[in-house]
Amino acid sequence: MQLTSENYYSQEANREYMSVSQFKDFAGTYGKLPCEFAALEKLEERWEDEETTALLVGSYVDAHFEGTLDKFKAEHPGLFKKDGGLKADYVKANEIIARIERDQYFMKYMSGEKQVIMTGELFGAKWKIKIDSYIPDVAIVDLKVMASITDLKWVKDLGYLDFVRYWGYDIQGAVYQEIVRQNTGKKLPFYIAGATKEKEPDIRIIHVTDNYLQEAINVVQANMSRIIRVKSGEEEPDRCELCDCCRHNRVLTRPISITDLTAGI
Image (cartoon, rainbow, N blue to C red; front, top):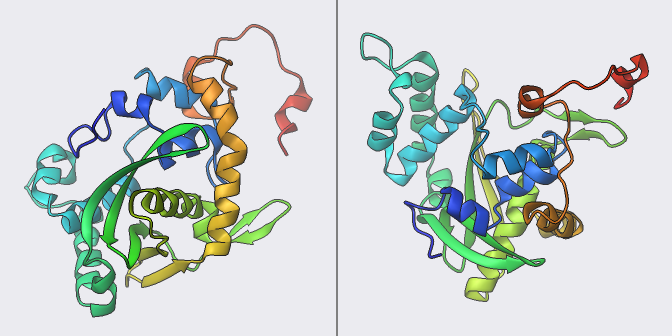
């Protein structure tokens, strides 16, 4: 199918193409639990993740920079209080936007073509990407709104990790870089344009260097054969038994042992 802004997030597109978010549903990241069962339930429209305030704030800022904020507001009446004013979280989103727009250097990275769709093939699957700010021949830029840029996350056996690797944004950068290369012949650097929801929003342009992207693309390669088999129905999906989807669909057939309660530690 030919992808457009109207059908990019459709179930038909998600079944035909892999995306970074779908990959992370199947394989997880250090900060996101993988669940093949939940990933398939989403593809079959039997499960939908809750649209959290944190996600909506990021989408609000994204919508502003792609020029679709009025449409976004119309589609999300829950942004507003009864008196018609924006709820506090979205007032903060406007503050983040204002902070970004008064920094010329940040805005240089946000000056590219918005929401550029490209497709390609990686490790036996068709992939789709949608770039927040694509500067041809220069850079691939993704806008992220987060709690903190500098906070580190503890990961067992690894130690402290930055937010980029913890949430798998290096995986996003690696896939985007390769799909852009397939479409243009150019291997472009990947940047995160980061802004925080702190009282005084922090802003940074973060270059995710190629050594991290190479490690990330190796992770994608290592997982794709299994994901393809599960997605096509050749193999049964594993259940994490810890996510909302697994809890919702759990059918008890036997007791568990007390030792099962600490099996994942």
